[in-house]
Length: 235
Image (cartoon, rainbow, N blue to C red; front, side):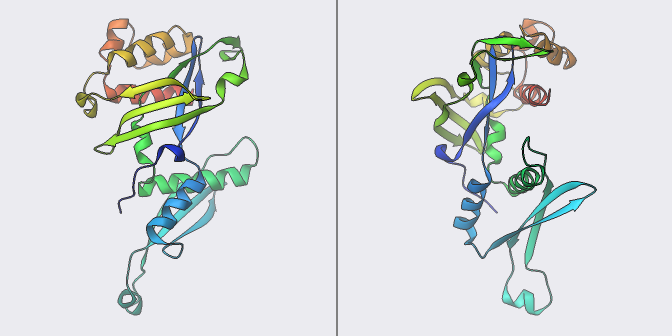
């Protein structure tokens, strides 16, 4: 099954991790986007979803009709299923887990998987220390962001423009070598990571990855950057 890549107006932006100089931004899709793409690809009768709770965790399965009348007559199951678990939301536990598990199951089918190739998106903003981390000094700095342009090449994001209230705040255009997971990151990405490393928590994440000097940062590969982003978002 091959699904079309997401359009710019189907992608949402939200804050990832907040540091001393600003915050990282994540790209994501919502459940309505998944349902719309499934409907346009298979018609509403060509797919279905189901939920199960296993040891307190909500799982969702997305089934896609992949058979024929002859298969059904022979007793063969014409439905192919892919499942995944969800995470709790900060508000409604069950509803949040159900929605999250559905979105993750859709990623297993390939819907929106290209978002995992997003570059490191770092937005400068005023922050203030709180506990062991930081928060935005003005909450309004975390809202109003939209994906204005996005292009893909070889299943990866090759061009990205993000705006805030109509003003361009982030741009990315991949060089050819960026398609290689083991190739070094570009200068802009390295500079963004060096700025983030001024925060002690971010520096600790880099140190845990064996990246301890500015020279190490500049030698980071695309694969290492993806792992760095994952650790920052889970911190």
